[in-house]
Image 1: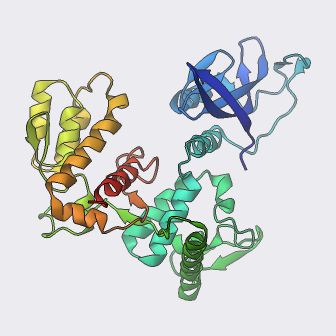
Image 2 (image 1 turned 45 degrees about the vertical axis):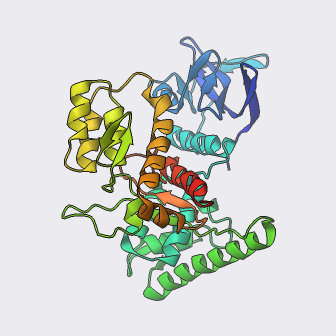
Length: 366
């Protein structure tokens, strides 16, 4: 489990909650044990340094921070001791620590962390065991820090064995729960693993019905997005209508765009030529390809969430049949599948899934 404790910092008049843990910092002539803090707004602090998770990765890569200073190097533990570094061995790697801290940021923002995102995808796969849903499980499982995977089911009798059975092929040999043993995956073993998650999904749903005063609410997640139709979109579109590249004209700033994807990427640049090329792209995926190459508008990272929310509202207000499809998902958690972006996709922050849920909640009373 994360080896961290609570902390906080002031930003103006606001208290921003965080978590902290210990790392070693290279001060040139010696190493020092220092506190590394990560906060709900994504800021990472140590000593006098301020960065984000990408900057933290760079600090590990260039040796500014480390989990294991070289043996014999000068070491100072402020206010406590000084000497030389003993032989140290860490059971973690920098990437695993960064993965833990990313989970902490999710937790601080009351978002599902990597384990919960994988769990939700597993429940969705158990309900609809398609190859596409299994690939989503595979991606999300490998996004969980490796040393935390055995805890993700919250079941010490099973560890993560049911997940690994589902991800393996029939006839494949995988490690069993006991580290010195293996098991061979059979069709029966896969069906039992699926049943494990089907029973888990049913139990979770029943527990929420009992506990939620303003419910009942659905806990079975629904996976949307990720489908490509090079020969034309289905007509009428089913859940594909929820994809941002599904052809559905939207208007922003007095201009019409062929899809949310076209509008989003065209608006991400203030270069008129690039804007017009993106807007004229033949399909949403082509618009994204062009948009990724275009120069980005100043302040776009801070604005993009609001722009996407506005575009989604416009789309479903202009297209009642698509709005009916969205409302028809009830109160299911929507996991958006976008292989190109962990920011928008359920493999990361799932912002598209969350925005779709928000728009749905606005539409439902109507």
